[in-house]
Image 1: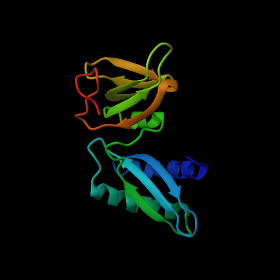
Image 2: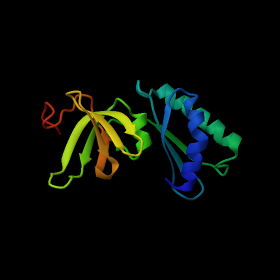
Image 3: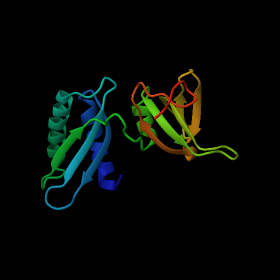
Image 4: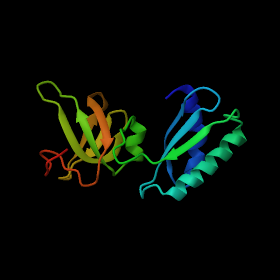
Length: 165
């Protein structure tokens, strides 16, 4: 996230939260006269069209009040989608309880692994907390997480009771 995206995130997060949803991502893309401001929001109950509309109005009002992007912009508000790639520790906290798939780099003497379970947040700077289907909780160090994404609720992983994908 660039410095302008971080500044926009800081401005918009409390505005979005007043609408009952979490702000996941902010990206200002495209140069020129009318850049596009892309906003991704999340709710544990799913994001409705009505919530996207309310967030759109609230964000536009907030940007106007702050005098930001006064030269014009296009605004896109969307949900994260079923298979969103999780990009940072904050997203593991936002999507706590959601099914996720982790690609884990091998420790010495091991082979790479794919793990499927529920995101249980993070443990300080140590890593992501994952609860597997059998109820075991593991902390996967950040240094070993190669990739992570949201999964469908019915996804099974090899060795965890199903075929995997």
